[in-house]
Image 1 (cartoon, rainbow over the protein chains, first blue to last red):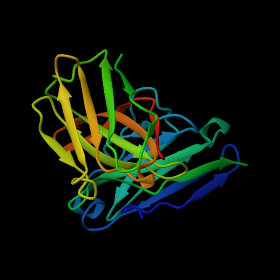
Image 2 (cartoon, chains in turn purple, cyan):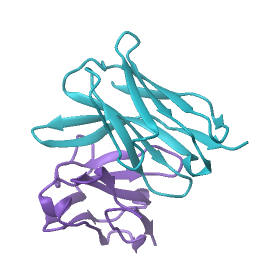
Image 3 (cartoon, chains in turn green, blue):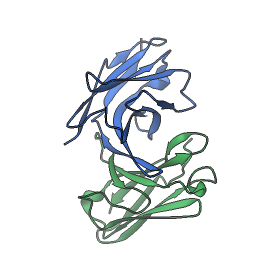
Image 4 (cartoon, rainbow over the protein chains, first blue to last red):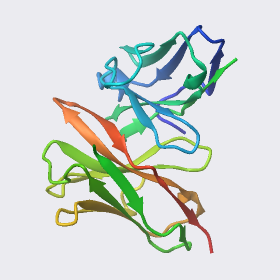
Length: 110
Length: 122
């Protein structure tokens, strides 16, 4: 059971906008700890996609954006592309459990 | 460019100790700006943080694993290691080593090894 809850899957047609939610609680996201996002393709290691709620590392396309509000955070993919089909995980800090990850969301492109 | 590489046995017997090493190249575990850690992923499941260590040996562990885990750093070899004691089938997972970067009070895992599958089975 993950401390941070994500929808198991989201899907969209190429070019569409999709949103992945990450819901926490008052001991993690709601305690003003930052949220980070990772992208993982099958059989490979996760890759940092967004750090500090909304910042993109060098090389990450601008169609990926992040935000945080209250006890939740969101990752938005604007203009979904076939190569975005992957699993996405949110991550934050929790006062009780230290570093915690979301349950993961599989993005499929229709 | 920073690279991390996990190494160790791919098969461990139940009740024994799982031992993995992470070799770091293109960077130094002696750097004061980073923590070095382990994260695992059971087959078909999500990610679980195991613990982290810095250059001076300060460690932080997942409370649910703390009694089983020891993470160490070897500055001379530029590597760090994981020992997970008394393993069961539930410890079967891909184990990743990763660098944790901290800026101000915010930190995240910005570099990952490729991961190594460890199966616990007799």
